Length: 97
Length: 143
Image (tube, rainbow over all chains, first blue to last red; front, top):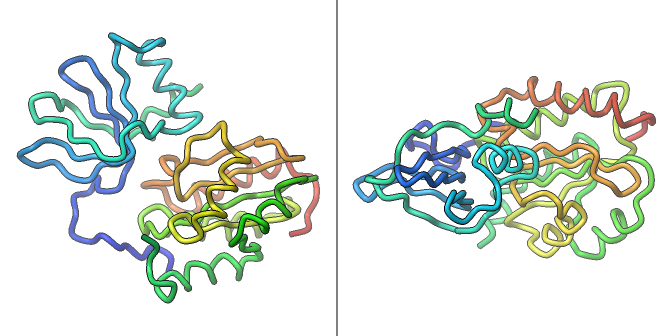
């Protein structure tokens, strides 16, 4: 059963934990589902909002890398106007030190 | 909603073939993790083919290393719901994800591999991380 995929036919990032940079300055981390007209659909999402967070984005991401993604939203759509670049969380691993 | 048990049976068998003990009830989890001594590898299994399809062979490869945990146990996320929830209480500093792996020594998490550290990586790369942790934290060779 190794390598068996239950969700064939999706985008390359489908099911991958990603970081979405928001135009508002918010950062969204969660499992990517798809990007469509409504925006980026994600699952089990943690959000860093610089207006309310107790730590800066880098510190927050470092904590996410070490302890995992806080699943604040089971499902979340980041509107297309808000959604900026998308990268794999694992690619930010150097933040964890 | 859990998948059809027949569909996930091969994923369970892949774990037990490598010597992992399945914990399917809260009582099972408490019996193993409740007063754990020595080193224990907890594998949180998943139906996700992208990540779990690499995580299981990664663990199998790592367990062929001379140094390894004294026991290897597994719960199945999305299948054995109560057992998985209970197991996660023993690694509660870490956010839930599946698949994931926790290496515990005397009940304390000393190494954790999240799903995002498995995605997109081959089994050998993940196995190398595990072997490094085994070398660092495990002194026994019995599984």
